[in-house]
Length: 263
Image (cartoon, rainbow, N blue to C red):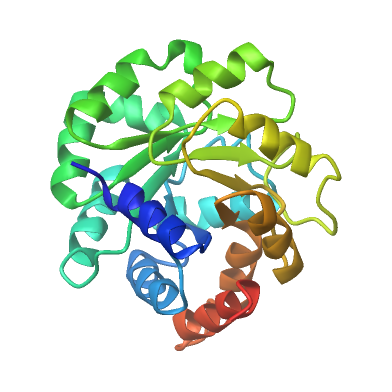
């Protein structure tokens, strides 16, 4: 059976549209705030939402998401609490949801146990950002057994052989990293992005979403011209940081996302 992520991309393709995929860190500024943000992002036009699992050593993230992770960890956010949050979202929403995590919290939870709990909670997929595809078989098998998508990152520096391996392991969509380095906002996207996306398309029929450095409406439009989806993380997390003390924080962030996606 197709996941919500797969159905969403199929529906968008049929309509000639592209996906907008916001990232937020679970527990920043609080788990209650995350719940409000998920619903607000859906209302603002999000197609899939990435929920970040806070981890003590976020080596792939820039300072904005690192600060969000620190705030979430100070709130004692755990993987179990995030799955409880997902179950709560599922009481009112069918928005496709995926976890973005470092591998250690997933492995520590237990892969089979995690897959079963995630599927029961209503999660659709998981991305383990620091898990090499060459070592991913146990993870992929555990998630596949419960009908969950496994999304992998592919970088511009990846060899053709490695791109093929990553494309075969990815389901739901393939996450293309727009540049080398950590997450964070940027003023200009790489001029080689178009060639990179076209190269990926020669290796897979899976939808391709582009992230890292997508931080302005013009970036989203550039990505949509070549790929199937745009992932925006740091720009949204920074806006959460700016507005976190406001009672209408989720609404304000939702309006920010509407502007990002050009609505």
